[in-house]
Length: 273
Image 1: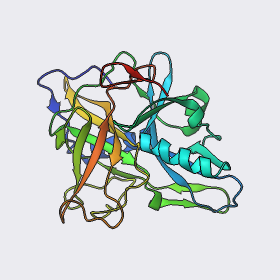
Image 2: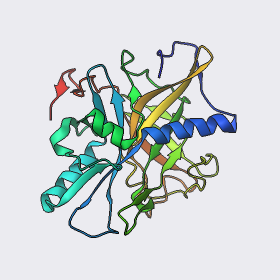
Image 3: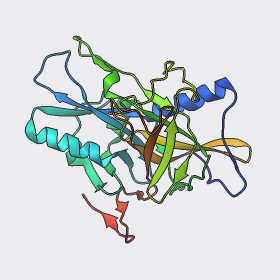
């Protein structure tokens, strides 16, 4: 990340296949599976969960995911105390105990992450020190998004797991104070090297919730990126999208997160746990 774009900067739309792959690879390194499973069950087993990412501020590293993901985990944990949460391959992680703030209306949740836990995830924490909040995306600004669909996870008897990712390099279709709207169109969008087969319209993106959304821009002729949102809601299995050719996907803007992890309320205050 670098200085905030100024008026007159151009949207970044990579034409070089190598640059496209670089953008996709970066976003994949930022996104991490947030999973939970019953520790008393033998392997292979069901791995439920979603996606998260990390922001580095002056005083701490903050994990970010969708608030509805925390709701689902809390309900599942209440019904089964044997559930354990992990951030990719991290040790057991107390998600509920590390929550900093939650905003149901904006569908944002933040949680504290130690340097040790961050290292265990092998994630790139986006450096936001001195460069927050991010600039407001404009229509047609290039974005990169990434998440880990539940339908594309596999667990093996040797206690290993594979998390195949879904990603896209869309442009901003429209934007409000809370949301960015994008479209996914397999006939238009280009696959990445780590996701060479584009899923069809209506593909079940459940599990991608909480995934990172980076805005790309040219600043002084250099490619820069800024975390601007998280994946909120997409098409569910069996849906056909809002047309026969593309899906609408809603992204939740995160500029309201403060460097301490609290979230600005509508009145300009902050939201506790």
